[in-house]
Amino acid sequence: MAAGWRKACRLMFLLQKHHSCISLRIICGIQNLNQIVKNSFQFSAVVHCQKGGMSDQPQISTDLGLYKPSPTVRGMTELDRNAFSQTVSVPAIRIPTSVLNKVVKSLKKVALQRPGLKRVVEEDCNKDGKDCSNGEHRLLLLDPNSITSSDSFGSEEAEALKAFGVPQEIQRYELKLTYENLKSEEILRAVLPEGQDVTSGFSRVGHIAHMNLRDHQLPYRKLIGQVIIDKNPGVTCVVNKTNTIDSTYRNFQMEVLAGESNMVAKVRENGVFYEFDFSRVYWNPRLSTEHERIVALLQRADTVVDVFAGVGPFAIPAARRGCEVLANDLNPESFRWLQHNTKLNKVQQKITCFNMDGRDFIRGPVRERLPSLMKGSQKIHMVMNLPALALEFLDAFKGLLGPEPDQGLSFQDNLPWVHCYGFSKEEDPQKDVVERAEASLKVSLHGQCSVHMVRNVAPNKEMMCVSFTLPRRVLYSKLTHDRGLEKHECKG
Image 1 (spheres, rainbow, N blue to C red):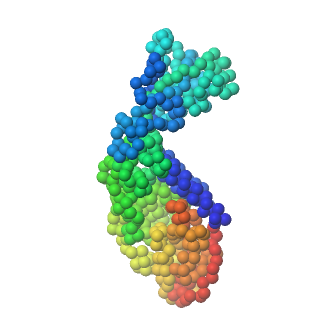
Image 2: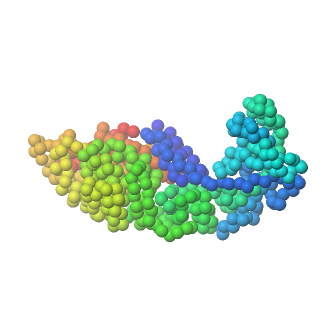
């Protein structure tokens, strides 16, 4: 089952890598694929009738599905928009205006469909001495991949044309395509070396497009950045990650490829507003579904302890849900923006913010408050979203509350519920994260945990979340001796 799960996730990763998408969140196994957000492309075309069989454009292609640019654009590193002009010849049919709407509706399966393109155009009155001064006809442009001659219409289309008295006569027309008319993927495929992977995918963070370019794409990075800005309204800055995420402050170095250098992003996720300096804090738009999943587990008046809170994607929605929140982050910039975002969303009275190391936070403020919280009836959720290291931080809970209290003061029914994240490159990632959690806690989690597949991060690398009730023998020092760790699997 785990092998099939992993194969499905790898397939999703390949789809992400080769599809032009802004953000792709991959939730395999337990959760369905959610939110595939495609690039918004602008496409417009200037339509001309073919005059005298001659065109002033150097290229005419009858296949609109394949953009065939001039060889001069191959290897271009500085964007020259004028070099992408091309004329494409497409079929068209002449339709009386009196039945135009009905015929267009009947031919919608074979009509030319491309974003921003007007399928119905005026006739060229200068062609073949045709008299069209009365404006009683229009031209419907057809898909050249579906219609190549008057015999290409299917039975349904042919019957409709006959019923409305429209002759099955095909004319040739030219669409003058320019840079403005092309999709980003078409442009990049024309520029990058043949046979190389082409990507126009990126993560959108407010006005910033965040890319992870590969080595062979780096010589073209400035051009790629400009194309992304040109083709995506609202994107005014394109950056490329130049190193891996720093495990201390969870940020990374980045290079501005195109546009402005303003890194302060304004983001809305699941109805909550955030502002932060993207170059100095951690933010991943692919985790919005996971944020929503955890928040959905919470009830009003629950307590949430967010050990690695970042700028607040768990903490602030939890506070808006009516929970009391302790939110901590070691990064001073994350702490500053966390405080800012609590005020931005008017939940500062519900969230207490800390700027501490995760272990110090657990063994300080959390330890001080936990006994009184456990006396209450509301649930306690501890979120530990630092997947590179969080499983190792679980040892901070060992003996946290010292000797176990008298039986009469036992709070067995209100033990904290932990949601701890980790990366795994193992063949069975579920088993891997559970065993690593058990190794840190020195107890078995058999029957006390569940594992959620969050997303496929890269080939052979998954992000997982293991959730479990924190065992009493971990919290209290009297019960923390190593009792011989058993090997058990959690529920999937």
